[in-house]
Image (cartoon, rainbow, N blue to C red; front, top):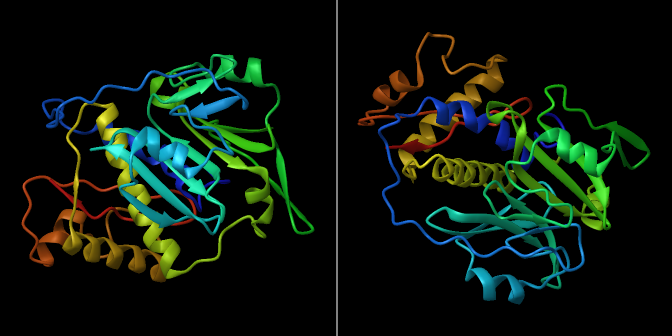
Length: 287
C-alpha cells in the first residue's frame, strides 16, 4: 500500500495475516454489543455509522457518546475513536467548526446509496463506482495513486475522496472505508505527512485501535496497551531505521520474544505487527 502508508488507512493490509495466526480457541471476552440500525445516506454517497461528511460533532456524539481517545493524523487534525470495547468501532476527524471532515471504519458500519457495504465484492464496487482516482495534485506535483496488490481503490465524489479497502484473505471483499473531505485532502501540501512526535504517537495508538477492532471482527479478545512492550517495540523500529532492514528478527537473530525477554518482560503469549511500506511501527501489546 502506498497512498495511505503514512496514515491510519494504510494499517488495514497488515492486520489480517496476524489475526489468521491467532488461536482459534481464543474468544471475545466481553458481552456482545448490539449493532446500530444502518440507514441509507441522506446526502452523500456513503455514511459510516449513519454519519456523513458535514455532520456536527454533536450529531456524532448523540449517536455514539464521547470518543475514547483522539490522536493526530497525517492531515494535521485528530482522529477521534468511538467504540464500545472496540465493538461498533469508527473514527471521525473534525474541522475547527466541529464539522465532520473525515470518517473511517473497518467494521460493519458502512452504508451507501449503491448498496456497497462491508463484504461487498471488489468487482461489484468497481462496477458501480467506475474508474478510481489514479493521481493527486499536491502543490505543482502529481502523485500517482497506485495499489499494485489491489488492496484499495480511491474515488472522488461528493466533494470527498473515498478510499475503499479490500481483504485479499476474504475473496477481495470490502473490509474498510475512509472518507476525507476534499478541502482537507487538498490542504495537505505533500503526499506524505511530515514526521514528528505527535504523528508518531498518533500512528501507534491508531494501529493499536485498528488491531483491536479487527480482532473483534474475528471474535478474538481485545489487547491491552503495555508501556514496557512499547519501549521494546520502539527500540526495534529505531534499529531497523538506522540499520536499513525490515524484519521481525533483528540483525543479531533476536525475535520479538527474545527482545522482550532481554527487557525482563514476562508474557504468556505475544504478537507483533507493523505499518507496512514506508513506516515500521511495532505494536506494544501483550496478552
